[in-house]
Each structure stands twice: as structure tokens, then as C-alpha cells.
Image (tube, rainbow, N blue to C red; front, side, top):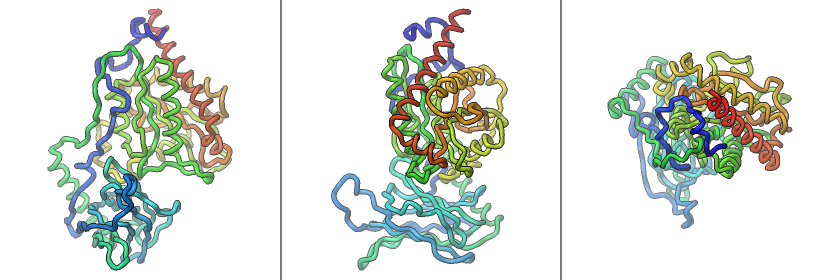
Length: 444
């Protein structure tokens, strides 16, 4: 049947994109460096100092070529606070600040992080917490959360000397909100001039011939600096979602019915808007975002399927959507620049009615199939304003596999047997969705 799918009259929303096809694995994101990364910031009292020097030599292996940050700590108080990171070699550093929420963003070349698992979870002084990880190929980032507006008083790297490691040092002092926002505006103006209204991001993809197959884009949630939820038993959402996506992709490809693409194929950060654009670049017939929940009530468990809507189905759905939508902020992206009126208009655009109908059909198929495999949440199909599901031109849905905050769900999320069964159910739901579309179109 699938060889004749398009011949039977099925046409996805936005069919004008039909000739845009790309190979699997070709979608690699170059993050918006010109928008989000500034080499030197020295405006309105926020100075950035860059330093570079040869570091201690590491063993001659590919894995150890990048410097290692092996310790990080916060010292000081509410009047002056310092962040210190010890590392094996000196690097260049660039710093800028963002509001809503207040953050100090530290961009550095790609490094290895060898910190304790709980590093960054507790703050001190004006730093409330920090996160770290890869932000794009060749680049790492440290995001320092703030208790309020600050001025970056010093930012520098001390080269290693006399058995002392290289050190990254960030000093902040308190300032007014007005002064903080003035620095932020100057940063945005500088980036805008360099961009000349052109976004500095490239989705690298090579076109391929029309195959007659449907294009399914799988979106493993989180990645890189954005770890997602963590369970007490060791489950990390960004790892769980990627591993599940890889299993599901293999099953779908094995049928010979689909071209399958992943928004990320390794541990890298991909912005929410970029995930949607990757789906669009691959002329997605179906976009499935894969996540794992976390909630303060540890007794709450079960799989949930979501589609997008302006309002949330209930308080829980709204809270989970708000949490997932914070991924860009957690990674230190400029939300004011990212959340353009165009994106917000798309989210609430009622002209997407046909796409929304397709999403509902798929979501109900998915719930039906998953019920045969795993325990579902008491309300298994819900709606909320997830940014990653905002595409108006192809159907999108999200599966929250389970709650890492629940011990029983976490065990399942880490079970290969369970993931194999779950992926079988999702694959059957995808098959049923396209079979239904073909039957309906062919019967007209």
C-alpha cells in the first residue's frame, strides 16, 4: 500500500514544499552565533576581558584534545560574587547578560566537563545556580542564573602556573535593573548591526530525489547544555529521548515506508525554533517530539501524548508546557530576539485547522496503540502551548514517555525491553495514521 500512498491522493499541508527532500543525518545546526555570542562586551559598565594562553598538555588522544574543566565553585556574598572554574588549559572567553530571567552567559570554545553530578545545583551570593554543556559544534557554554540585576565587573582567564591550574573567573556586583537593561540593549544593537537583519544560522542539508516515502521527523528533546529532567535512579532526559528516537528511527526505516530524520543525532543543544525549522527543511509529513516528564508529585506517572493549543487542557499540562518552553532560556538564548511576533502568531493561528485535525487523528492513534504496551496517565491525550509543536504546515505531536520523577517510570525509561515495546507501538501508530490518511483521500 505504501508504494502507492501519494498516488492515492494524499497530500500533506503545505504541499508546495513537495520537492524539498533531504538525506537523513544531513540536518546539522550551526547555532545563531551572531545573535547569541559576542566576542567582547564592554558597554555601560559591563566589561569583558578575553585571555588565551597555552595550557597543560593532555594525553595525546582525540577525546582529550579539548581542555577539561574539572572543578567549579562560587564564592562571595550579595555585594560581590565570583564564579571560578579550574581547567587544564587556558581558553578564550566571552560574556554577556540577558534578562527575563536574569542570566550571565559565558561562551567558550568546546571543552570537556568533568564536574560532580550536582555541580551548579546550589548557588551563593548573586548566583543562584549554573548550568554547562555544549551549545553548538565547537562551542560550549556556562549559564549563571542570577538573583537579580548585576554588572559583570571582571571576566578573565588565568593561565596555569607553578602547579596551579588555569582558571576562568567571572566577578559580578549588584546594579539597577535600568543599568542592566541598558547593557542588554547595547548588546542586542551590536548584534543587530552585524546580522543586518539576517539570522546567522544554517541548516545544512543535501537534497535528494523524490522517493515516494513519507518523511517522519523525530525530535529527541533537550541536549547539550540542556539536560532536561533527571531521575534519582540516573535517568537523564536528554539521553533517554535520544536513545528512544534512535530505536524508533531504526524500526521505521526497516519498513521501507519512510524517510526518517532526527533533529539531533548526538548530545548537542538545538533551539526550539530550530527544531521546527529542521522539520520544515525536511518537508515533514509528521513531526514527533520525544520527551520525559518530571513533576513534584513523585506518585504521578504514565505516558502522555500532547498536541499544541492556545490554552492548556489542565494545570498540569500548562505547567509541563511552560517547563519545556524554558529550554531556550536554560541554554542562555536571547528569548526576546527568538520570540518574534511571527512565531507567536503561528502558535495561535486559526488557519492551521487542517493541520490540527491531522494532529488529533495521529494523537488518538498513538494513545490507542500505547495503551496496549504501557501504563498511561489518567488523561492520556492533552493539549498545551508547546513551542516545538507550533508548525502550521505539518502535523506535530509530542510523546512524554513517562515521569523520571517517579521511581517505577524511571525504571521503565531505562529498560531496553520496555523501549523496544514502546517503539513498536509508536511505529504502529504512525503506520495507522498514514494508512488512514491514504484511505480517506483515496475514497474521495
